[in-house]
Image (cartoon, rainbow, N blue to C red):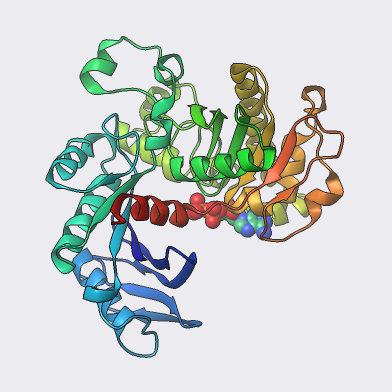
Length: 396
Ligand code: ADP
């Protein structure tokens, strides 16, 4: 079954055409600067091209991608109509409506529209992507796969904020959590490696956006992102956990509106804000190695936060069988993994420094033979989760 996977953002579109049976990606790419001017980076048949194309709206971008799939040097299928079986959409916010992926119909679209206040940047773009696919590829099943769905299993004591209860009942203010497809995939892979049904796993998804998740017996018990992805770990440009009074203080001191402060905490903070160098960890590690103290501080804040979450989640679950590292930083930055795990030996977490340094793109164990808690590096595969859920909901 060939599945077209779409991740529609406000001015960009990421896509893949995947063969579900073989996991093979036939084509993939990114349309950027939609509504501004337009550019497409497209890869197929071992050929990667970057082309400036005018994309006034998402519709022109998707039309262009579909054309590339069936024409020219990067052609991978004969016709859209016969060769694409289903479309899987990444949707950031499913609110409390969705605790698993769903086949999209009018009622699903209406619910996504109702959720726009909770994800004002993301959900409108996803809805647009879904409507364009329904128009350009009529009759094909579309599936929504949510970042939040996996976390709907959290108990109320973990998802409720300690503010008046009416803010939850009237305005849906609560922790939702994100990166659910990644946490679900990685924790399942870890459970297979542990070969234990009642496993307690902590997944550290560390990329530009980062979150930690406590997974007990395959279910999300708690996670570090909140109502929005701003809460929790320090990230590339997001501040993570913060005294909420900082907002009012900054509004007054810097003469900013509430929205401007939230934007500042989302886009100018985190690794970028503390280091003053970059949101990209590689550049910060380079600067730190050359003696830049703010770069070193940024790394220390990030690692300490991760460590605190690991300890608190082990406490909440009453133990931990495995710590998993995934995403760009988690999979590649041995320094971060070592700093996070060092000092946690008292909990039975012992990293093998040599195994940790080995670089490859496979799932691997990096704990010592005597470590009570296993430490794994497990490459995430969010697109595969989307393809798999799409397959399961649409197979005949
Ligand atoms: P996104 O959240 O955008 O999907 P990624 O999962 O690709 O992000 O992670 C991006 C982060 O991973 C960046 O901070 C980047 O510096 C970091 N990263 C990627 N490769 C390496 C590496 N070899 N060593 C250290 N950090 C890396």
